[in-house]
Image (cartoon, rainbow, N blue to C red; front, side, top):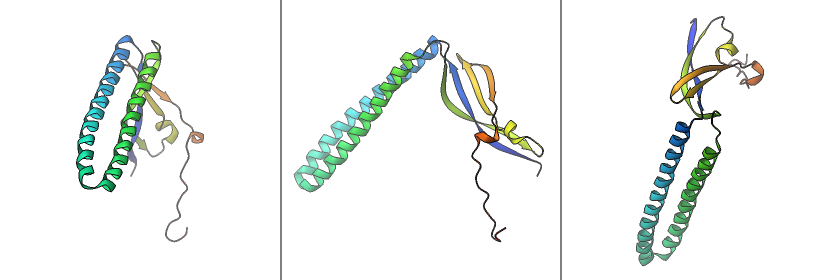
Length: 156
């Protein structure tokens, strides 16, 4: 085999513009509204279920109440995280770079290639939906933690 195609992560970095900021705020507002809706639905259903369980088994009702409280705390944590993200988005300055997500790319490695040159970190710099730059960040052997070589079955 003379070559191999590997998966490589590519960072998506957006230039902050008014359009991007508006889109991010809208996305977060929608997520907060959805989380609130789900929380209210859960609360309504949980009260109904808890009332039904309390009529038949008080011990089971206590366990259910604990599970309900745990789920409520989880949902509140999600809403708090979304609110914190919105605060961060509000603080973004125009023209700043905002890393948002990864996509997968492929890189072909051939015999004789310098591995660290081929596996450089790639950033797609995007402004208003248009790729403005493809940035390669050089990596070096010092930036990698290489796995230890496992010995084969014969102890070699």
